[in-house]
Amino acid sequence: MVRYEASLGGRDPLAALSETPERIREVIGRMGMADFTRPLGPGRWNVRQILIHLAHDEMVSGVRARLALASDAYVVQPFDQDAFMAREPLVEAPAALAAYYAMRHWNLPLFRSLDAAELAKTFQHPEDGEMTLGMLLARLAGHELHHLEQLRTFASQAQS
Image (cartoon, one colour):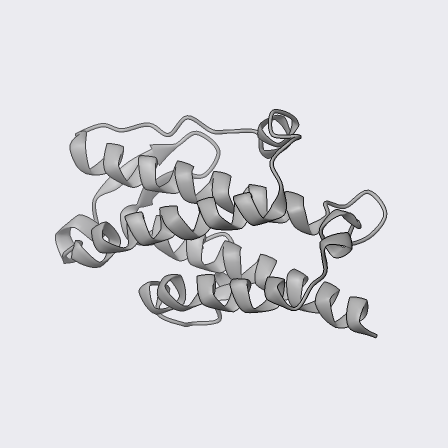
């Protein structure tokens, strides 16, 4: 089972990866600057941090895909999202959104170019075991759809 498979809801991962950045930009565009730093709830990240996290995940996923394609026995180096976040305290929401958006448009041509054999190429994840590139793309797509739903919920509450 792919993590965030429920959020993907059976959608084609490439279609979701193509469409979701615009949906995120649309939701963020309805928010005011003050919304970016209000936490989504007690002990939870704020919108700015979610955008930074999406940029981190896009960067890491693109590198992982490239390393898996270029290696015969690639093993993922896991990353601690909270440790990554602690190193990015000054990145503003618009810059994080721009970085995520630009990296997605950098990664999409690669992701779209993968044939069935490449999508089936395996690599090892120390926490999740054997994965394929297709699973990596499905996880990335489901993960950002999960966060899109959080952002939509937050935006609707902020406008109320």
